[in-house]
Amino acid sequence: MKERLIVALDVPNARTAQDLVQQIGDAAAFYKVGLQLFAAEGPPVVRELIASGRKVFLDLKLHDIPNTVSHAVKSAVEIGAHMLTVHAGGGSDMLRAAVEAAGGRLKVLAVTVLTSMNQEDLSQTGIPATIKDHVLHLAEMAQRAGCDAVVSSPLEIVALRKMLGPDFGIVIPGVRPAGSGFHDQQRVATPSQAIADGASHIVVGRPITQAQDPARAVEAIVKEMAAATVQV
Image (tube, rainbow, N blue to C red; front, side, top):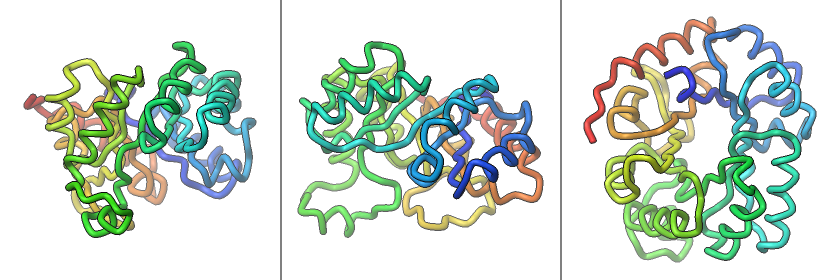
């Protein structure tokens, strides 16, 4: 279960990231490097994590023309990332270009609707569908394009698992242990509920990185995940 928990290193610099990884120790093996840390430190922070035996989920949410995304994916492959996000909203051609560039050497994850968005936010972008229907539409497109997984909120897991089948990846941010604040997330669930509903991986940031004892926070989440009963 430890391999299914991704710790989000949403921190401002490599020193802070290194301190957190050291504090967490062997409790976690998989880390997310997102826009904040990658913009500050670049590929070296990814390479350092990989050299230390960790896996890296590079969460850059690429969204550009197919040729540009293709070259960016090839660069992510070269630095050793295990997973990389692209926006499903970039369309089928862009998704296929990302998958082809990955060549099976990293997993391409298609982001559907951000967990910070609610129905009103989605409507403001000009999309008339419900969040659930739009997530399912984008996920179906991503699966057809050859992506390895999708990213959605916890509220869409059950419907996604039913549509995508038992083996397709469903990576879930917006996961908050009981008693944690929602922060800027709108659509959330607990670790046990996300796993029980069929998530392949969950991403947890502030409940771990802002904890007094990050390692203990990780261990508690992994224990809760392990106790979940899969319902689908």
